[in-house]
Image 1 (tube, rainbow, N blue to C red):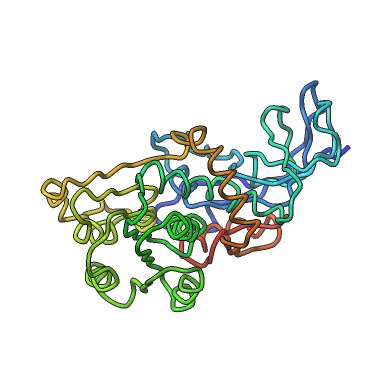
Image 2 (image 1 turned 45 degrees about the vertical axis):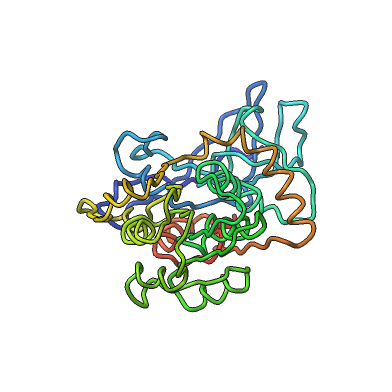
Length: 334
């Protein structure tokens, strides 16, 4: 049996942008298994933007990370010791104790991975939380309907790239995305976006107006700030916003000031709905698994990954994620 392992702890809370000094690699002993538990060896772990908020000691929809305790997050793993009959050694599972090389979990805290024609990493991306967030956020939170014009910010990321493709597959009249490099813009065009722009190239409101001259009906917000302001300016009457994230503000040390034009939401009768996937997960899961399985099988949907290797690379991978260094899902191979 494996008797010890390594894990990443939060060494201190970031003030603004995280640095490597905020993380510490720690070697710990593993206890013996109790009945109903499994020992897993993590093979792939996820880093996600929402983890930045958990590094602050503030009340939120998930508890904050604790100083001198391991971080956690999505992971794919192999069962290497089991006291659960339904989870024999060799079973591939997903679970929520990433940021470490091994983990001990209750049998009901892991989810076996169904064998298929996709790599295991897909269960942290297109078939995992980001994919389900994209599906539920667009179709339930934003109530997208056939014929809607849809704008997605952070459109080359794990969630945004899937949102745009789902919008196209569900009959959007026009799909627009924003991203931060020419390479990402080119990739969005390959994925079937009707228009895409680099937010570094000029005023976001003006660029969106040019990309969607007749306005938009739905905005899927991963960025916040000036992107939300631009969307409000360009939304048509009865437009809807699904507020999924605000990555432009996660490292801010000063209060955000945008959007300045929120009063437009009154006359336009806009709906701005913040959401977390927990609200819609069970309602959306059956449709998500049906549709996504079909789209992947027939090649209608594609996904990208940016990978780093080794547990020691995880903190820098997370920092780079917040800087927009990823195209698609950022993962760490362990």
